Image (cartoon, rainbow, N blue to C red; front, side):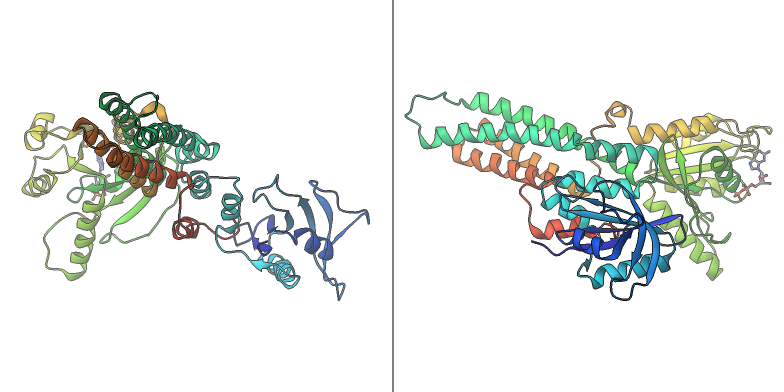
Length: 456
Ligand code: GDP
């Protein structure tokens, strides 16, 4: 049996309460040694018990707490679990944790509670990853996707496809090993059809990955434009409209400024660049380098023009850089006399979305939000929130599985030996197994759980 582990499960800092979590065979023993119920009655399992944590040898009282003991396997880790709800100061938590460790527990590694849930078969790997996403979710949508995954939506779909591959594999093996027996014969035609249909199903799941990534990590939008077109005003207007999640990096006017917004449930990282200009000023150059970097990393460039002025040489230079990029152009200051038309911009940037806005009156801002939302959902995948691939690991495995299945299809088309096709199907089946954690190596498990925070 593994060692009993313990950790502080709540964030550091002041709070109403802080929780110490203990998991493993020794949980009950440790809790009963250090917790003294106020009523002198024995600890009632699965109920919060009021009392004190005291040092078993000195009798010193460490904190006034609520404690609960839950017998496995009906717990988060599927092991015996104890929780001690202390006062939320780091002093109380450290004292109690130290005592728990002295009594025989070992400090848990990040993600170790969830890793145990996985190793004990209570969660598959997709579900374990969903736990990380839940803890780190920055938007309602990101949270919803994670909840669906925790509930098993992606795992079920992947398992269903794996079952089909296993059926196929069994049939192939029988045909290879017992070609003379009286069994349902596989034609290359039927094989090709089944592989093509399974390939399409995998492809469907893969197609949700970009949306999944954007919902989880947010999309990064760089705001560019020459000085005084209204970049900061626009950023502030959006910030007022949406709920800002974090305000990162204060920056200066010469630096880039980053803000996180939550627009229609999607996290958006806005980077206001200092303006892309040639300059001899060294400090300014750093700002401009950063702008170009932000520009290159962004999913979308939001280019702002001052509609009350003619398009200048500087505007044109920026538009040159935008030729190859996904861009949204705002012809701002719509409330003033307009010197730029939609057509003027469309001539330079035929592929861009162009909107008229005024950060002064707020007009056009709703449209900007709608375009950002469209960008994430790309139109057609909008209704499939419940089934989204949300990380690179899952996507990579799906893509690799898909290429084996497609290759199998080609082999069937060409009438290759069944053994070759069997190898493709088997590889596809194994790779899909890695997604849910059925055919997975220790290294991968280590990597997945290393992304967790302490106490989860
Ligand atoms: P930035 O240098 O691109 O960040 O531009 P600012 O946001 O600092 O705006 C420059 C000036 O234009 C400020 O005086 C703003 O009040 C003004 N401004 C920004 N947007 C609008 C707008 O939509 N209409 C009008 N009339 N003025 C605006």
